[in-house]
Image 1 (cartoon, helix red, strand yellow):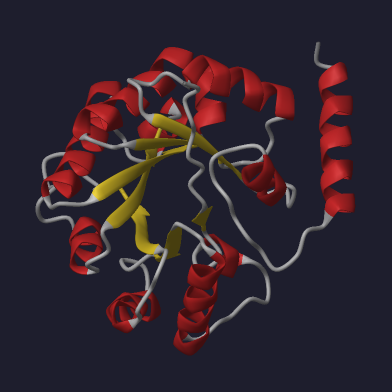
Image 2 (cartoon, helix red, strand yellow):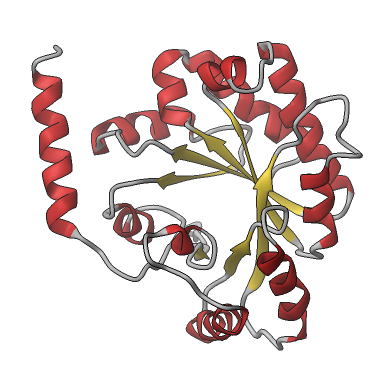
Length: 252
């Protein structure tokens, strides 16, 4: 009997979609969009970042009053700031208190950022990811790990990028999302690195491409994540890809 695969629709309109220029939605808007996405059949709705602003904290309180038929609401945030202060980290505490049953957290998978931004050694960054994920899992949450700047980190040091993802798996994350945070990776690069990384301890591996507007199309049509947005500017996206190929032709 042929094995079937399940495609999980993961929508980030209420978090990533609100970061666009000129986008400002109220609590009422967010709740109304949540209901429509649920009616559409979306599996997971990323509702916002409760540790970043009062509006998102209020949303996670009020969304519990909705009678959703299909969707589970997900909270977004980051790993803790210090590996030895997991239990008292404000961001993690806000995620837990949101009561969201699914939590997406991002962590550094590019050594440049873990060293320069957080000031952490490879070992400490690995411990930070592991302990942050483990803490949320122990609090009864399904954890999705966003490997921030994964493709840049992989180009810099494949072993480092993969080891950071493995730390999340070890902590109990059931989905690893490889993020092209800068948005500069070309399709063949994404394909190659995704192919090399897809067997991360048998966890679901997805990808999240950023900056170029065509990312919503790739997530919806090619990969196991879907994202809806207010507009798709294909002409700008095609121009960006062509220019990237043109520049790379002079670098090889």
